[in-house]
Amino acid sequence: MTPTIETSLLIAGVSMAGIFVFMAIFYMLIIGLDKLLPFEEAKPVEQIVATSSDDGEEEYEQ
Amino acid sequence: MGFEQLMPAIAGMTWQDLVMITIGLILIYLAIAKNYEPTLLLPMGFGAILVNIPLSSAITQIDPATGEAVEGVLNVFFNAGIATEIFPLLIFIAIGAMIDFSPLFRSPSLLLFGAAAQFGIFMTMVLASFLGYDLREAASIGIIGAADGPTSIVVASRFAPNLLGPISVAAYSYMALVPIIQPPVIRLLTSRKERLIRMSGVGHANKKISKKALILFPIVVTIVAGIIAPSSLALIGFLMFGNLIRECGVLNKLSLSAQNELASLVTILLGITIASTMTSDRFVRVDTLVIIGLGLFAFVFDTFGGVIFAKFLNIFRKEGNKINPMVGACGISAFPMSARVIHQMGQKEDPYNYLLMPAISANVGGQIGSVVAGGIILTLVPLFA
Image 1 (tube, rainbow over the protein chains, first blue to last red):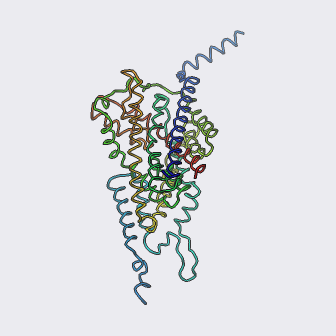
Image 2: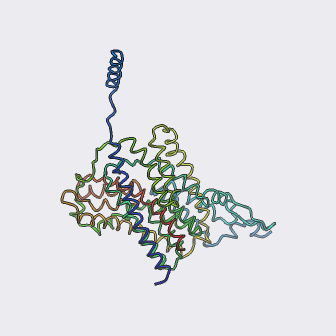
Image 3: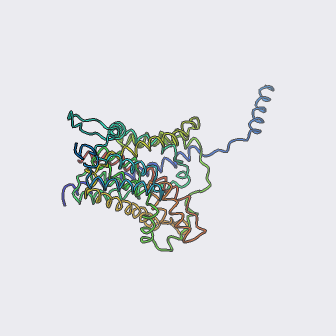
């Protein structure tokens, strides 16, 4: 076995392990982002208007 | 006045030039008649004709009168766009703007197939070393297995510019041939029972993804990749920059421009510029045939890596939650072709088996995986070579 083949085998092993490590990190990033920032349904316009008018009433009463 | 002076191009034509012109015509035929990656193969085919007509002013020639080099426009493009890596990196912005990462958020575990299906790259690298190529050349040939044209061009232009022509032709040709290469390999490695596995238990096909998460993803990936492997940052960073433009929601016009005008313009220039390396003296060699053979080997072993990894994972997964091993083959970067091929194979076995969503997730993982593989090769090889 020539030194070039030995080196390329070494690079192949390290690289494959490296790609899996990268992907595992990205996997955890996705899981983390998904947990931290879950999807929230956008409020319908009427609800936003109602909420803001309620707030206004409270301020007025105070 | 002799014939040579009257018709210098005909007089100077060699059989190697004729071979290259024929190859150019074949590439144009495949692009138009078979629709094989026409955006790249057509400019490359036309460029191959352009640079192989003797004394073509499209490439650098020596002026016989003065003995000085007269630079050809394709060499100017090459030095400006490929030697500097500008063209492939601009393509990465366009690709980033086209990628939707939400399928990965629905089935994040399938991201790992984007790693497993890079196996062919490294098997090919080892085989190329065995055949006598030095480490840099072997890595450049292996990267054909990334099934990702721009990554192949970046790696080859840095490590083996002399092999850029055949490597680019092989990468783009095999990407177009995914529907022909993958199915027989998959059938050879899987039983019918495995091909019938339904993946309703894996991931959440209808899950909605937060916009904030999709915006943060490219930023965080860039930072993490940059900290771990700074050499990979040009590749990953440009891809993620394109994706950020897409997801941010305030640059829709730029996102559309990146996906359409930028992609089209750079693709035209990239294809015809690569052709400047397809001159007969560089291309008509045994090396070219060997590289094209090794490219096929790389694609076959990518498929092998993905399928076998899925079968390995299935050993630990419960019944009803198993992965259809065919989906493992989608971990290559050829998007969405590979996902479509696997979905169609699944439907052939069972018309009610819908593998498209998991296949797309694995395929998006492959797009990231190929860029990561390119970045790792760019980091590691100079340390040893």
